[in-house]
Image 1 (cartoon, one colour):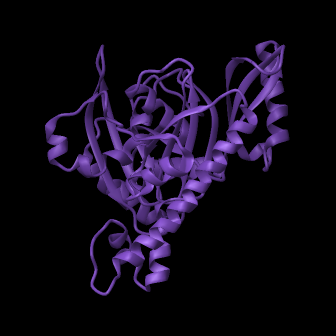
Image 2 (cartoon, helix red, strand yellow):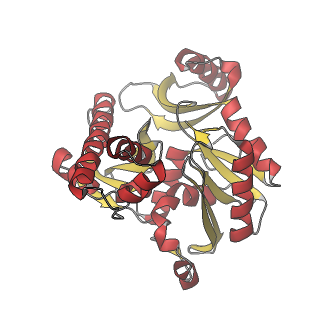
Length: 351
């Protein structure tokens, strides 16, 4: 979103739980997976989207690069969380030069931080359907210290960040690569990560509404840790269904069910926010990505409480993947690569 490139890049999705790497090769008709990898991050290396332990972070990235061996040093990154603002605004039909000035003024009105402290970008969505004589414009701003910290750390390992995107838009790019755009169908995309969940509601190839929710799989793990009196690592294992001596499976299920209720409530709140600003649209289905999307009972709970069609997405649905990648374990983390896949297809002119 903020920096664009003519060069081919690989996608590097930096989460609080792990770092995912995807490199794709473009042919005339489709994409082929060139390399893939994942490395877990020690707890608290990244907190609320910010790098807290740069040494551990850099060592982890180096290890991932050694294993995955991407063919280029050029990389696409993304950011999300409280340091990122995405907002749809309306401006009158004006010249391009006047538009840039108008965007700057509008940005200053909406940002909770100083305009000098952020990188800004925008995309014209088209004529507003609600306000005659106005354009819909998607405004994006990210705190400079957040973006710069990521870029500087990545340069420490010899990489060159050429694209900095927003998680929600990378998620949309991945989805539209793999799924045909169905005319006038409204789809909620949700990437459920460890600390954050990225939501993007799309229609006809356009983003109508985005929201980053401060809820992820770590909430489940921490709740299990607290209520069962076990370590974070043991709680993570229990969450993934591994039996542990002295742990009542019924109690585990009840704790997980409570956290599932919490995330379903956040999804419902997001839908309510969306309907308030888009009263003429109705969500047709929800597609889930991210490691937490596989949480036992989550999909059924969303279907039951929200009455919507819910699907588990496949980031590689229309990407050619050699069998060797599956043999190396890609199936164990493929659902977690949605953002990295979306970043890997970034090219010049993308918005």
